[in-house]
Length: 269
Image (cartoon, rainbow, N blue to C red; front, side):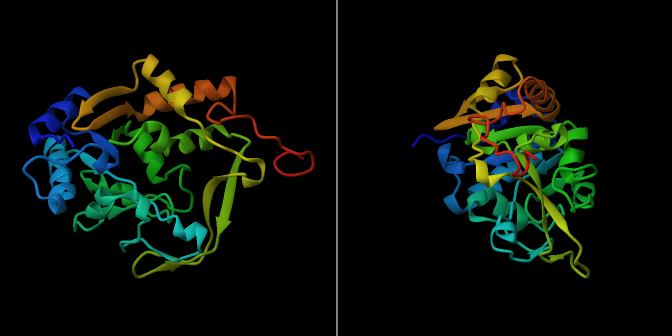
């Protein structure tokens, strides 16, 4: 499998618009890119994080998804200061959480640990809703964070789609309430937390390839080869503006097909 060097990684990141002082949300699938040359396999996640932090500089911020789906699926309590993370999040997520400088946002499902300049502010945002006003995702939007898809297809990993849907108000998703405990260190909140989820009774299936092609056609989504795979980049404001425009034309634009809602069964009443 073809690998890549630190020098090549830095060049590709710069070509994709990553700059010093930027805020970067990093989705990843490391094995798709091959090995980082001259780096022991066990050290690759930390070495990659170091490369990003060096490029971003002292005023930059690196953010990674460390979602904990078991909170919603199995009603497992969540500790904001712990290392609970769903297996599918990958090695970079685990490596980020293990860093003493990491600060994790408060939502139990769609949480984000951050390293760097804005880490503490992101961690301090409200965790009652994942994508609502004053959430970590809302702050990333206001910062116009750049999303980077490191070896993983944007159509498979762009969680930001749900932020766009949340703020537009699509009919095929709703706020599900949980009373599972969330621990914030010395204090444990017993009040409700919500997650923005799809209606499961109507075969709501996402198909984001069309939207990614639209973003690429507009020049908003850029791609570069790296090692054995590819890296993609798009900033949040571009994704939000383009996604909202698509939903105005068709509220089911992100779906494979329009759900077959039934009269008298929510959301069709």
